[in-house]
Length: 118
Image 1 (cartoon, rainbow, N blue to C red):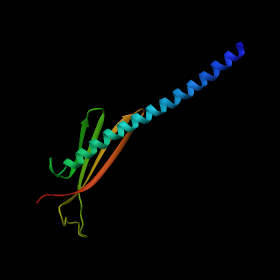
Image 2 (image 1 turned 30 degrees about the horizontal axis):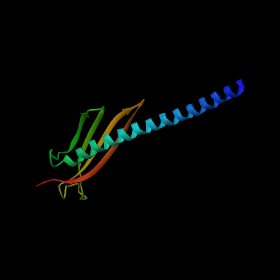
Image 3 (image 1 turned 180 degrees about the horizontal axis):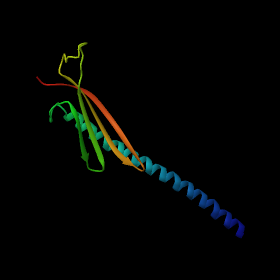
Image 4 (image 1 turned 90 degrees about the vertical axis):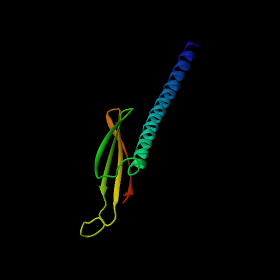
């Protein structure tokens, strides 16, 4: 009888240990999803505002955002002619968001093209 109780407690402990392991993995996955969602929203907002709410000028700018996010915006003119002249006022815009998770740094980048207003 005592042996059956000990075996039952051991089996229950193993099942609970496996359940807690699965739960902790799922929580880590939820944190990654939350980080990626926040980074995507920050990058999309910046990409949408370049050339509309803020000037379209070549260069690199960094912004620190709440929650430990850093957003880098890089704007470069697109040259289309063989001689390197700008045929149309077209710019390549890349927005990269960085954040720290654990011991590493993660990042997400979005890019697009913007036609400058003349």
